[in-house]
Length: 251
Image: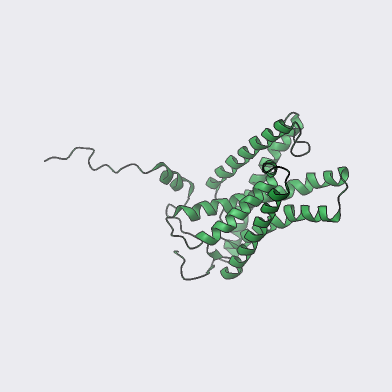
């Protein structure tokens, strides 16, 4: 019995598989979440545990003290802290995941996004928001300390992580940063219209200056992403050999 011409054609790969193959430069990527530059991976994992507790604590406090449960959602600061908390929780769960699993890849990209967003939050806050707050509000020492906890110490957790881990920040992963920034822009615009006042000063989505600030912020997020890639290349050049934290790694 003769076989049909189409009998031996390979089945098309699922859409998710094809997309993952596209965004990973290496077609068979390996889970590097358990590798560390400069410090022992065990020490990095301790930092991850502390960072998860810190960011989760900030996130819980923000929603607890907010007048409405939805109020914190308007702020990019909260988006960044949420990204941190989820990343640090997932990286502890997926650091030894099989190379073919989706979990570690999602965690990997999330770490890159958290770094870019938190770097933008730090820059935007201390260059624009904080000076404006000091001029227009009477701030106690506790108020200032609270802002530092949100806008300096929270970014610091992901900066230290990125200084030691193996996140490469490849160009193709930048598409997710673009999607995230577009989503937040719509979110910011929504809350500005609903409350009839800007979420952040000078960002009312009406004036040319406002739109320019929005574009500059998106640009700064990509600059931060590029810096992540630059940092990885520097680490790779200085310390070509990194260490695994335990024998369970699938590399």
